[in-house]
Image (cartoon, rainbow, N blue to C red; front, side, top):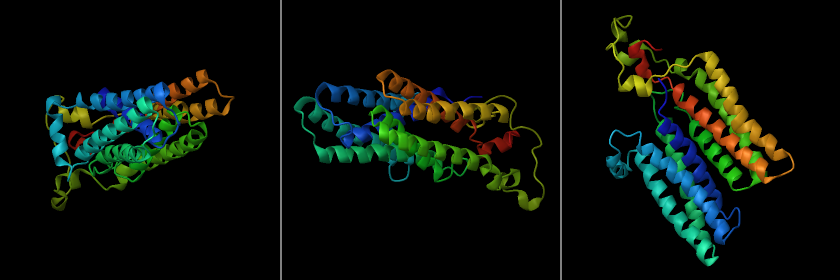
Length: 290
């Protein structure tokens, strides 16, 4: 079983895109005209492309608009509202820069705040889930926001800032992995607590709920060997964090900057795959997977 590619693409690209829009909203870099258009085009391509990829993961993509109606209780709905608001404001802000050489600072600041809020709401979709102890931690929003800001700074050409934020994101990534490895055990969840039958004695599964694969097994129960997980973590950290920093420390060139961005995106995509593959959803208890 493997995490859906659409979810990996969504969380990787949208985070990077909204991270770039965040810095653009602050006036970093201070560009206008067609140069500004190029930066905004990249930001929108990543953000909108990621959001579109997420709809392919839905059973009925045509009903995606209904998610906006539950903003009072649903982080998914809040994510959609924040994303649309951020994209609209940043479009107006970008139009001022591209067509009128005018920076409407207030729009930019609001757009930046909403871009960051979009990343936060995305992270809370996962951080709120008690059924996935590895995700339920303040480190989850901290990590996703740090990665978004670091990747955005890298794309925005803010080298000094990226050299600070990428190592911070790397440290948070390691802390997230270390804490996550013991999260399921620390949660105290087992077959007895999952079924609520612990009060009558020891609980064990007599046989699996069914013999064939189903939605739960495809989407929520993944098994990654410890050896393979460690290798993938090394690849993710090396590409996503270590390589960009090393490339940015050498004398600057556009070619090396492009390689740094590519390495970062590849590394973050690998870490995002692990984010889902190592999730350890409690529903796996019913299938003897925990």
